[in-house]
Image 1 (cartoon, rainbow, N blue to C red):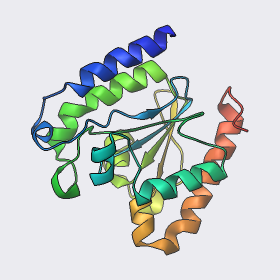
Image 2: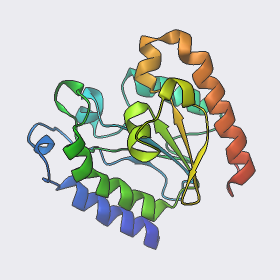
Image 3: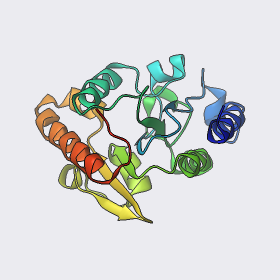
Length: 194
């Protein structure tokens, strides 16, 4: 087991025992994240939904299935070359947006994941993740697919997979964003994603 892997496992164990906010009272599982510990691309969502809470893995419902298809189309896979996590690790009741104080309590886990992974590109899935990670006044419908740089890391907001299920006519624009991501990966990442 690599030193990075050991560090990640220790962090995961600590996170699974977290009781820092009220979301711990209603969760079935802490949804720490999924992927490889040498990922140069990290995808970040807002928080787990019902399926994720039951399985303990991010993006496993219908939205996750759509996400996996779009990722596969650009040679990305949660089990091979990326890492997927959320801002909050426990499901907010009735899938409501995570409250600012819940995000504040939980963001330390995500920051630690980022610190260990050191990804070159962060993809924010949806408005809430983009507002927390990229900039508070993000306009997701106007700015999705654009790259922003913060502290030497490229960040891109994209439309949330669940939003694409509700508005399928936005799927072509979202797929264009994934193609832009694929080009950027080829340009700046060390690993080849074939």
